[in-house]
Amino acid sequence: MGVVDQNTEATDASEPFLAGTFLARLHEQECAALIAEGSRRAFPRGTILMFEKELEERVMVVLDGRVKVTRVDQDGRELLLNIRDPGDVLGELALIDHEPRSATVSALEPVVALVLSGAAFRSYLESTPRAAVVLLEIVAARFREELSRRVQFTESDTMGRLAARLLELGDRYGEDNDGGIAVVLPISQEELASWVGASRAGVAAALQAMRELGWIRTERRSVFISDAPALRSRAA
Image (cartoon, rainbow, N blue to C red; front, side, top):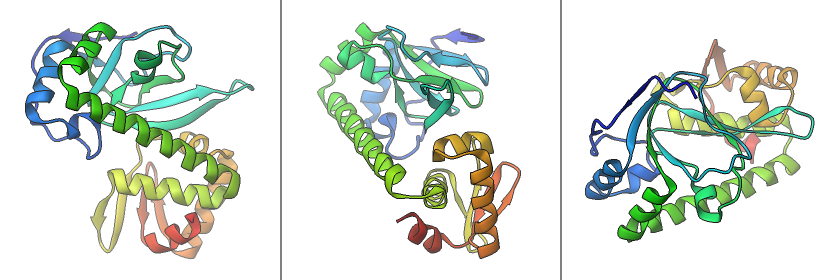
């Protein structure tokens, strides 16, 4: 799997994680107890951390770096389902229902993750009931997110879906700058097109239209959202 480093060095449980992630919702003692149950491993960019359809209950929690969650469709095309951030838990569904993994997880950049056996993570949840509730809330939120995206795919065109994804990226990674939101994209335009559910040419055309309307400015691997209200209106 391309593991380049493995040790049990403690990670600071007070380290800030993206709001809403599993670790961000835990109390400091709960976070420290979880970290004590696993091992800290580093993975280079491009490493596959989990394989779709594998029977495996190992759980990971991202400590640093970002990963992409993908699935292969009936035509053999890779579909980008989501991006997971520092603090996010990976592999929880296979642990819960004992079914094969539903997606592949790959490192978008160098990643450090806490790796726990299924037995160790289950034992942690049993001894830390509030953490189990947090996990349940996250699973429910991801289910609702998936339902919302399914509705978008049936009711919105490429431009509407792209507007929604750009706003999501802005909310997650954007920085207020010069009256707008500057976002360094963690994915390529091809991956963005896969996430939007459109061709690369279709997304390129939609980006061009948004630039001409003055909603965004783009550079390589970055976008500046200059008119977020217009994007929200188009995404609705």
